Amino acid sequence: MTPNHVTLGDLGWSSDFLRQLDEDELVRFTPARVSGVHRDRVSILSEKGTAQIALPGALSAGDIAVGDWVLMDPETERLERLLDRKSRIFRRAAGDPSREQLIVANVDAVFITTSCTEEFNEARLERYLALAHAGGIPPVFVLTKIDHADDPDSFLDRLRAIGPAVPAVALNAKAPGAAEALRPWCGPGQTVAFLGMSGVGKSTLASALTGLDLETGAVREDDMRGRHTTTAREMHAISGGGWLIDTPGMRELRLTDMAEGIDETFSEIAELASDCRFADCTHGPEPDCAVQAAIGEGRIDAARLERWKKLRAEDALHTASQAELRRRAKATGRLHKSAKKAKDARRGR
Ligand SMILES: Nc1nc2c(ncn2[C@@H]2O[C@H](COP(=O)(O)OP(=O)(O)OP(=O)(O)O)[C@@H](O)[C@H]2O)c(=O)[nH]1
Ligand SMILES: [Zn+2]
View 1: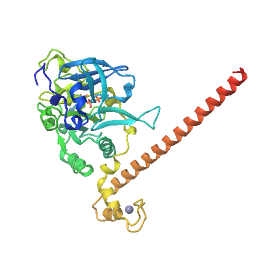
View 2: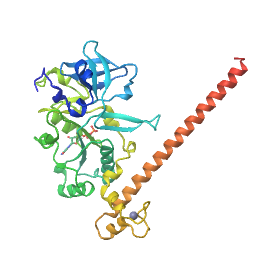
View 3: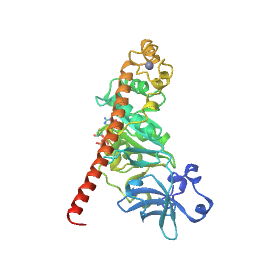
View 4: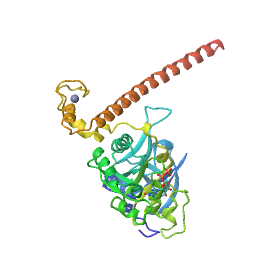
């Protein structure tokens, strides 16, 4: 990619988006990728470079995320339409838990990063996997600090136990060439993001991939990659092609924010469950439980079943409390209305 000419393909445009346009839109509008979201406008990247455009009245900042594709009218510079996403990372909105709060959109791979240290935690990693699966993003395990461990392979074994089909890369994030190990997921048009606890090496790897000092948040705008691409504050060009999304929302994402995607994360348990005698088997004391049988035969780890149960229970609780919150909000609304009515009546309105 030359500094002054970025193609739609470089930006991640694909048939997933193209097929959403009708003939008229194909002729009239230009696709652009959202690289920053502000209160009433968005920063965009397109074949023409970077720009800022106003959000139309029908869209609020919460409806759109870094990574989104939009159509814009090149004559009026108006944002015409938001295209459907192929993947996303979301959490439940704090004020209104019935709503999904979008964090980033259209990510092709998420690097679930953990280290060969005390920080390594199966339950947490399973939650990250569930979050990736819920948003339709293929996960990749990145195991850092192999230089800290006597036996990095034992950590890789533990990763394999929780995600046998998830690719895993082990590295020293500070070693030269660390970025090379992540290259298979990066190329032109690919968008990636990091998930992981503080201190596991996300910023170190992000800096290695982009050549930017992402640890301090400083963005050098005068380097070889050119001004056009590096001015995007939350979408960083990766050397050799691709984009890294690093938004404050990604960094603030807490583990309590996630659920769903659980069955995909624990697919071996979900699959066995269909062989249990009872459709609503809790995989506890029930007779003919296929999951307990698999534990007995050593095919499934009992601790993993316990973590699955815990996550499911939390998810159920969360869903229930959301319903309760909505019920209360409604009741409060009614209360306010009737209080206002009484007040208005007293005033003779
Ligand atoms: N020896 C060694 N040190 C590492 C490795 N990865 C990260 N570090 C160091 O660990 C510290 C934390 O790394 P960061 O890259 O800042 O971690 P982070 O995940 O971005 O943390 P937050 O910015 O808090 O989210 C830094 O001092 C890194 O130099 C590694 O693989 N080996
Ligand atoms: Zn069962």
